[in-house]
Image (cartoon, rainbow, N blue to C red; front, side, top):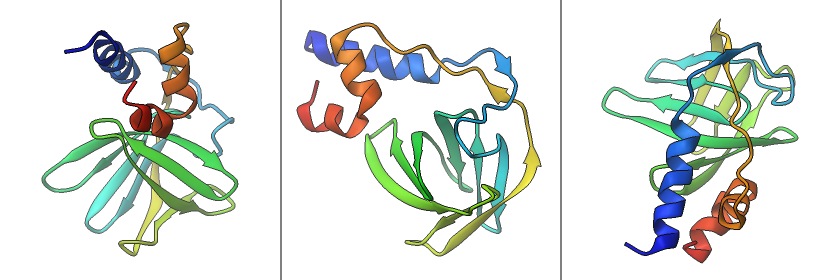
Length: 136
């Protein structure tokens, strides 16, 4: 495996290695907690990470809010998608699958990770999609 692939894998592992709790982070506009709809749920972990769970699988996403758009990238496969967020941040809508996730349970946010210091890490941190395209 090439060196840069190792660096990318280590970076993605760093993103998933959360261990400290913190207060809700107002930067995200989303309340940390569990958003549900009848067939699945989204758990907002902090202002960077969320988990989407279905009956048979759970995926971890890095996300950013851009106005009312929730831009997310699946960390396992680096697949990106966009969802809509209500003005109050209490509803997330997946228009592709017609799912409306409503905040049902607020929870404390996990601590956000520090930004990486390497050039590869900074590239991926700032734009995971570019990281995928360049196969950093």
